Every structure is written in structure tokens, then in C-alpha cells.
Image (cartoon, rainbow, N blue to C red):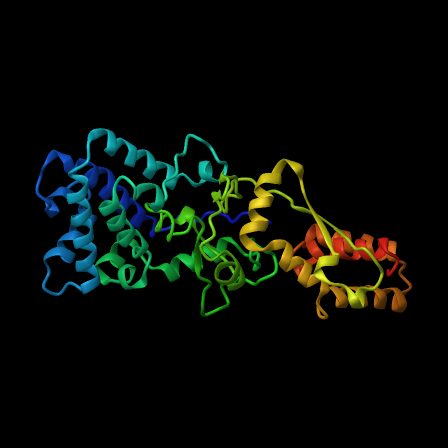
Length: 354
């Protein structure tokens, strides 16, 4: 990830507080043996009002009724759990929602995927999957009874882009992110995929706008927190401190017209972020995409033509041009893909084509 987003507090966070209450105060207390009823939500009046509407109003939408039924069904399955099993679920819930520790691969954040829950709790795992996979949906979040309490996702997006004005996708630096001057918005990516993980599908710490290529072509349901070898580090989309990714490009020859992605070697740094960088490259297909851009007629080859044009028209030698570009890259790294353009042209100079 090239840079982190600024996290934006918003009324929509209230939906996660509703889920927190349902989990801790309702489901985890199910073994006490009380019958499921809206009175169980007494400690959260707004949520109680929503549950009463969804469960008992003749005018309730079918999606609201389904939400009520799912909460009730999971309550009844939690009622069968032992105290030790309840404690395990509490640890999983906390771990899945602590994205800072998850991304740091902190062992204090025990993660649970549906695949981890199913062996011992097949029915409950299936019911949790049905509930949480459908939680982030306009058919639910757009219901009037709920929207009146938590606000609107489009309003959240406007607040988000007002605070995050870069206009480029931080996961690749290539794709644009729709901003305040667009009538449409980007999709929110579930960083820990909702297809794999329960408990965090409406947690905005786990929801980050991404360009279409990152979200729907490369990442899909890839898991930043796991690979075939187990847990791994990943960049936190809302890290409090930023970082600078270093890219070095090496070309084998001066035949830019015949350049193929397989010819290009890329090194990424700094070394202190090596684990996070490897995850980022894997999840978002970074090397493939950056190498393809360097080989493209309207990217890498155009950058070279542009540099040569400046050289011919203004008499800049390559060193002067690259010095100017270095200053531009420092101040505006994502304008015209300067973060990739600069190392590519450095590599062109090294093989003598600039």
C-alpha cells in the first residue's frame, strides 16, 4: 500500500456498535436461558427500537424481518455453548475487529475465519456466515428504521473524500478514486474479506474505498492476513503514520520498443516493511501491473518520449531532467504516476536510452 487513508468518524459507526451490543450483551448471555425478546436490547434503546420494528411491525420490510430472525437464530445457537466456548468466541470477535493488531500479525489478536469455526460449530458457523455476509447491504442499511439511526453510506463517502483528497487509489497508485465532484462513489472493499471472516463486515476500520481494478479484478477475496503458510503482516489501510515505498527498476537492454514484463526486475523497499510489501504485492498483483505499465505504449514508452522531447526542445541533459522529475516526485508522487515513472526513467538512463 502506497499510503494510508485518514480514518473518518461518522454516524454509520453506530451500526458496528449495534453489532457489538448484539454480540456481547445478547448472544454471549444466551446461556443464561432467557427467551429471545426485544427486552434483551433494553440497554441500547435505539437498537431495541429497530429490533421491535423489524420483529413485530406489520409494515416491516422482509429484509428487516430476516435480520431479526437471524439474530434470534444465532441467539438460540449461542445458548448451547459452554462458558469456555463463549470466551473463545469473545476472543475471536475482539481479534477480528482489531485491525491494527491483525495487520501487525500480533498474536494478541486471535483471528477466526468461518473455516476455523465450522469444525466445532457447524450450524453456528453457517448461521453466522449467513448473517455477517449479508450485513453490509443496501437492502438492509437502506431500511428507513435503521437509516434513521445510523445515517447513510453515501453521506459517509462524502465525508470520507473530504478528508482524503488524494484522488488516487492507495492500494495501487494507478487507479483514480471518485471524489467530491463525482455523483457516483467507489465501492468499499472489505480488507479482511467478508466471505472469509465473521464479525467485522460493517466495521469501517475494515472498509476502505478502492479502485475497481484493485477491488474487483485483483484482490477479490484474497486474504491479506493469511497465505498458504499461515498468518502474515499487511499494511493497515488506516495506519496512524505513513510510509514511503521505494521502487527500483532494472532493465536488461536498451530495446525499449521490444521490452516485455519478463525483462523487467523490480525491487521494493524499505527493508523494514518487507513483510507488508510482500503481502501487498501478492494481494493486489502489484509487480504484474507496474511492469505492464512500464511496457505500455501510453505509459512507459510515452514517459521516455516525453523525457527525450524535453531534452531535444530545451536542451536538458538526462541528469537535469531526472533531477527535476525527482523534485516533482517528492512533492506529487502520484501525479502522472511519478512514483513509478521516476524509477523507470532512471533504469532507461542506466541502459543508455536516455
